[in-house]
View 1: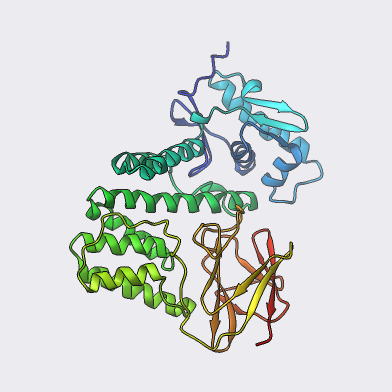
View 2: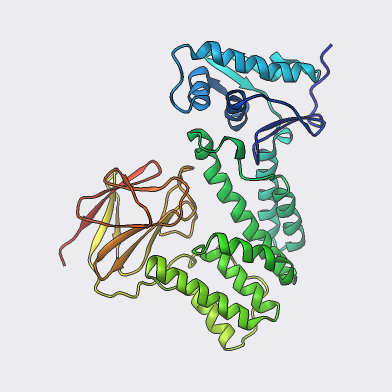
Amino acid sequence: MATELTPQRLGFEVLGPVQVTIDDVPQNLGGVKPRAVLAKLITQRNQVVSAEALADAAWDGNPPAMFRNHLQVAIAKLRKVLQTAGFDPMRVLATAPPGYRLVVEEQQCDAARFAALKNTGHQHAAAGRYEDASAAFSAALAEWKGPALADLRGLRFADDYAAPIDDERLATQIVRAEAEIACGRPTLVLNELSSLAGIHPLHEPLWQQLIAALYLANRPSDALEACRRLRRALDDELAVDPSPAIQDLELRILRQEPLESKAPSTSQDLGKTVVKHRNTRRAQLRDRSGQVTPIGDGTLRIGRAPDNNVVLRDDQVSRYHAAIVQSPAGILIRDLWSSNGVYVRGNQVFESAMLNNGDEIEIGSTTFVFELLEA
């Protein structure tokens, strides 16, 4: 007889390889197809997912004509795992026209636990309870076992899901470090921040925390060297200066001024940079709704994070996705190591591309038209 479903026994994981766990023991799910089907169901847990959407995920947009038969085999494999462990497979993985529904309690899913703990951490931080914030952020990060859907990368649906939640992981690592710094423990986060800065050389909120941590750990020369490294990277990649927040932090270090232990990573000044080149051309971006964004002599940052100049609330857009900058030769768009790329005139941008009047720019699901204006 099937046992009662309890959150303590059954688990679903997507923050790493996709897994079903019974008493924390990963179960054998078979090949890519059943794992892709399961991943799609977990990421849309407690919702009806159509057979067509599941097939599109499992066959990466190119399902065979007889995909329903293959899909039923994959569903049967997943239900067998549940039944073998003593659960009612038809209750957990229910048939629900036009497809299936995976019934999951929030505490059974690592992604849901991560989101809840992260939100708790932000609430503690907003109230100045940094010890509690650090503990909550640490618990949230402990849910991760690797990149999201690590064993399914390369499948479009997996990449689309992973990009924004991987960004959320990085953001949580940064605010956890911020909380630790606020608790007077800057040395404990230096290794992690240094490693992350090596992976994300243009991520100014991350570098701001690293620089502050180095200075508060009585390593002012290393803090200034970090400022120089960031400045070189921004100059080489974007031909821009660091944000005003970074420049102010560097100046305070040079003056040996005391620094508050909390350096807010959510400052609205972060990511806004000043271009060195002053032969400014007047231009603007126009989206499909007709909304216009002027392009001035500063860098125009585009992404999901709230400190961008243009904020796109789109899961397919990275936190810091693209930048439009003035250069001696004209106006450039640069891909800031985004997950899903930047496209100009239908072609993917590798590093940077010169913009011409009338160019269409695709970032996630948003299309802009670049318009040069008369001086």
